[in-house]
Amino acid sequence: MKRQRSSRSSTSRYKPTRPSGKLRIIGGDFRRRQLPVLDHPGLRPTPDRVRETLFNWLGQHLYGKQVLDLFAGTGALGIEALSRGAASVTFVERDPRVATLIGDNLATLGASQGRVVTADAQVFLSQPGHPVDLVFLDPPFHQGLAAPCCTALEAGGWLGNEAMVYLETEYSITPQVPSNWQLHRETQAGESTARLYQRLPV
Image 1 (cartoon, helix red, strand yellow):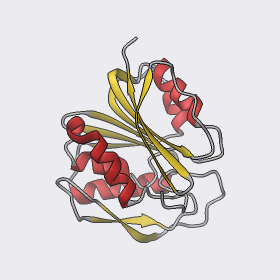
Image 2 (image 1 turned 60 degrees about the vertical axis):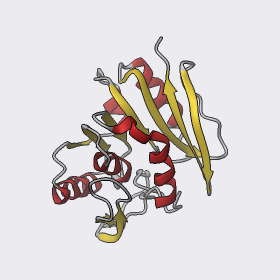
Image 3 (image 1 turned 135 degrees about the vertical axis):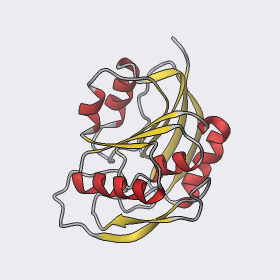
Image 4 (image 1 turned 90 degrees about the vertical axis):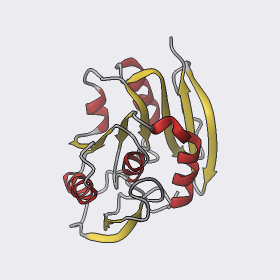
């Protein structure tokens, strides 16, 4: 992934943010649209090549599906899902400035199926869940967030019977995931490893 820490927020103290650079939608109804991205030390948008690989993996799975984009950051993955036919996407982003820009970008696209929640992802997952079909989970690296978030997704009722979970972590770790998650696809890019899991009913 593009190793400016992405969409996915960090815990560093932030300087004032401003639009800087563009996020390009690579497929679907919004293909080739470009959206502003904040100049923010905690953002590392998933690069085009990796997003293209992920959405090739997903194929037709997106049409009419309910999607949860945790640690949403730029919203790149969730917006791409909406572009490709997802019925709805909930974007969870704790930084208010970053969350506001996701909302602005959704409005620019006329993507009314997107909903932005300004909240810490772990706090969000601690409430009772509504089952979704697909989760994007791309937490900040080196903070030990992947395993507890995976546990919370499974234990909290957030996943439909055959939900899929995209998990991005630093390449140096093997993430601990629930035993009923089956690894479907995997790829490495730079300092990160991307994995797509299929949840098996229990």
